[in-house]
Length: 261
Length: 266
Image 1 (cartoon, rainbow over the protein chains, first blue to last red):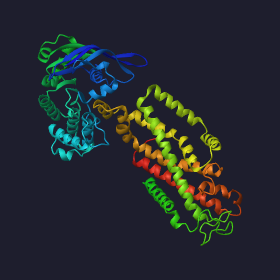
Image 2 (cartoon, rainbow over the protein chains, first blue to last red):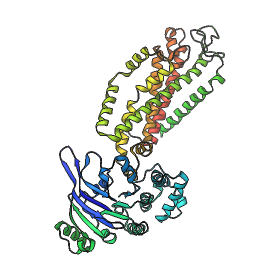
Image 3 (cartoon, rainbow over the protein chains, first blue to last red):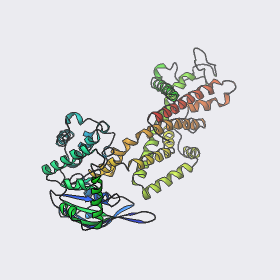
Image 4 (spheres, one colour):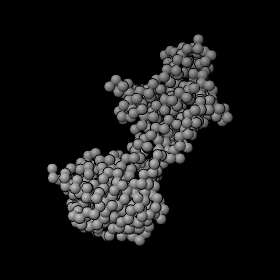
């Protein structure tokens, strides 16, 4: 369904060029979950943004193909790309506290996504928004829909973000460390929810994190990134038990060391 | 707290002036442009603020002058805010070359001594009330542009803007629906303070004879009429002067109060 070939994204800073993503390749099947692990600055978030072509100066996608459903996204115009974002490929972000606009109700924001892509009337979009809030297991969705972001907890806001991302039934969801800013208990609830929604919508997920524990729980396959390059790729069990790359080994060891304490 | 009390006081004064301006035809004792008495009578019960050099009632003229001065201030500042917001938003949102070009243009406009620019334009055009509003608006948008640019530079990096892009919002939609509402507090403060400036500029222009044209009364051209009578009829100058002072001061107090309340820095 998704095939990324030789993707490179560089940041052209004044004193140097940062190769945030350097010639990476990977693919993803329908309904599959791919984990991308790596330390901070390894380029994993840049991969996510590159897939949606949300890279702005001084950054630039230098080369590569992003083949999604047999279409190369790199060849689309910006206005064609806008129709893909949110409709076919969606994204959720790390910090649920800043990823909702403070001046609109959560209902407004979810409905906006629906109105943008499905040409529904305001009333129909609101009805669908209530359904979406129910789908992400928010209680009393008809009441909550009128809440502003500051009235909700972090976990609730992340659920709202998920509702917004999935409102138009996309085929691919890119989750960029969606639970990193949350408590451990909320974290596992969100992961559980994501798994259920994946079943329900037959969704493909790219899950970005630095946490191997989460990867193990949710992903089928994993790629390990280090300094913009893919250093290891494979089935999750295989990578965890038998890492080939020294960096992957260290990453797993450090995780075990932390667990050991 | 003290600032707050001043702001409320200023707000009350402004409300009074606006109300008075709206109902001027109902409460004005005389026709403002009509000669009703002998010339330069001092204030009395029949002419609260006295009469001017032609024998017109200054109280009635002040009421109608409030209409003109406040309207000019409001319209001019609206024009300035619209232009400034548009340029500032584009500049801050897109950045790069567009930003550099717009900001250098702002610098050039700021480097111009605007009062002379306004005078030059007014001399070329027929000086009437509409041109006054437009010209003041066109020469006072730069502060707003800089302010809005700064806000856009800050807000465009926030994650909810990225999230809006990720659900497929166009740039236009992001600028006007997602960023602008979050930048409104400093714009409101700038508009309030800008209105005070616009009213002062209107007065200065009318005082120089290049603003609102007689017989239409504005506080500025009432001041101009008083020039030759400073000694014999000081109330002719003092009254419009005090009205301008109270209005501008009230706007400053309200602006400062809003700045504090809305937590705007700078």
